Amino acid sequence: PNLIHMTFNRILVFIAIFLLHVQCSKDDEGNNMPELSSPPIAEFDALATTIRAGTRVQFVNGSANATSYQWSFPGGTPDSSTEVEPFIQYLNPGTYDVSLTAINSEGNDTQTRENFITVVDPNSLQGEYQGISN
Image (cartoon, rainbow, N blue to C red; front, side, top):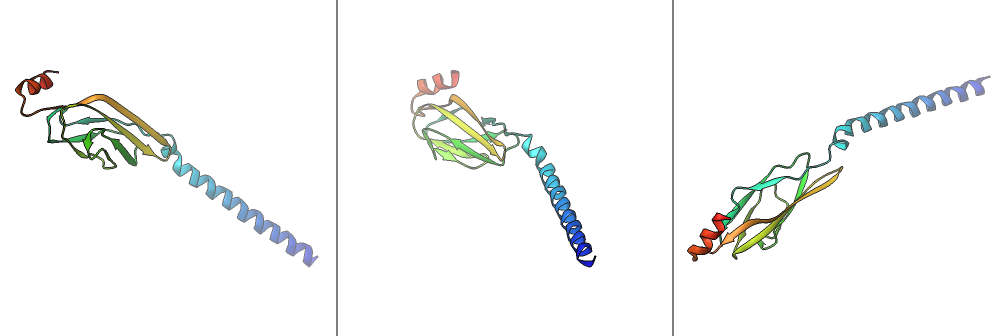
């Protein structure tokens, strides 16, 4: 009878530990639910969209639910950044696209704004006037 009693107690302890483990796992998953239901949304603007060649512009991050960022600035210096709100310099006149990817554990979202930044030649009054009027 002692052997059966000891085996029965071990089984009860095992079941109790198993049930506690399952319950704790459910609690952990429950804590992550708000994050899992909130994918990131990429959104940005700039303090200026028409600038003189050789000057810098600061980008304003309006993204939601993101934990990190990947910016792309073709034609800018630097041409990429992981900062929240980077300053980017444009040396050559032209129009430039900008992309922002907002990232979290749920995934990522990218916003691309084509011809978003217009860079004008500071030595050309006509070029500057045309750039500002657009």
